[in-house]
Length: 111
Length: 115
Image (tube, rainbow over all chains, first blue to last red):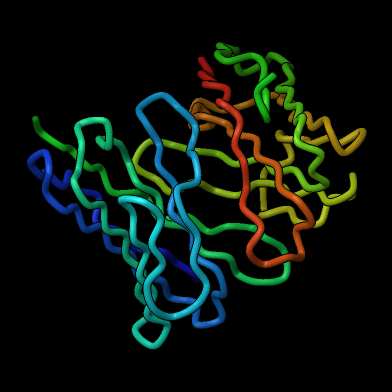
């Protein structure tokens, strides 16, 4: 069973703080890793993807990947109330870009 | 035009009804997907179509029947559904599914309630 695990939260952080979202995956053959944001009642939208070990930065967002530990994280700097959403971690199993999703972590940023 | 459009946005149907969900993508992609999102469960991949050919079917009950007439359109035909099939059904599209970093773009979803 190939699984993607996330803490369901909610993760509560004050405005301006760093939010750290974590994800582990079971399939060592996973090659690409995606973070999607989903607002309540809306569809998921891609924030970042990463496929090499290390960090990848895009604006306030940093994705971190450690394949040896089968761990991927998303850091959100200077968190804003508008960042409040559910963050979905997804991994690509290779071959086709069919994504396996975690249940998501709800993030709440308080003003 | 948004990238991936789904209709209807909301659907209530009885267990004996037959209905269809429609998805259209305007991104020039050649792969389309149906996902199911239930409360407190991960997004579940149902079907994958690449160049109008079904390439993945994740043990989905036969009461769900997909159809992909061309690379821009995808349907999910529903018949004799069960209340546990109530969920958000999301369509997605991507470019060249064999490329590992290809991201999927999602439609707004159809909120289905089976009564």
